[in-house]
Length: 130
Image (cartoon, rainbow, N blue to C red; front, side, top):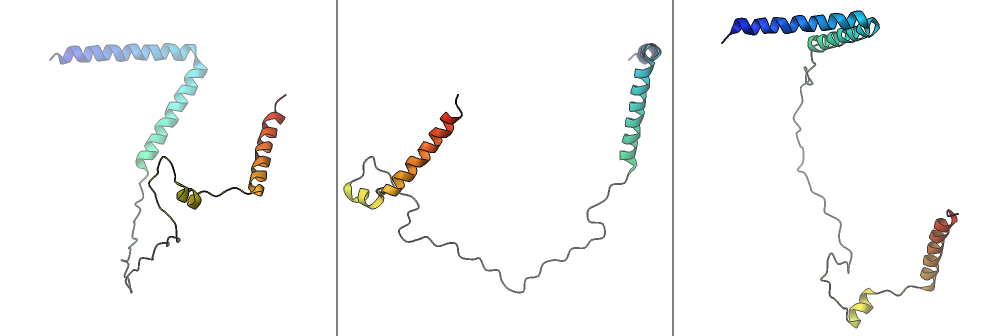
């Protein structure tokens, strides 16, 4: 390995970078001062983050184990209502007995309230239209 050539190449690049920064600072003094102050501030913040000791969560706090005086009881779940089906097998067509059991005919009041709700929706849509 050619360490001497490596260090010469590195020295050459550092000198060219220094010359580039020097030329930029002489041409743009205001920008150079802003960038330099921001870099110094950033460096100070990094140093502060490294130097500030981190606090541990459990400094001197001792936790006591939980001691139960009685055994835990699991409460009963909610009871299902009578005639409540969790699931059922669907068929393509119901017979008359199933239709009578599950289908509830709407009353006049239900039909009128549905009609009013639909009319309100239509009025809201068409009312905003020019």
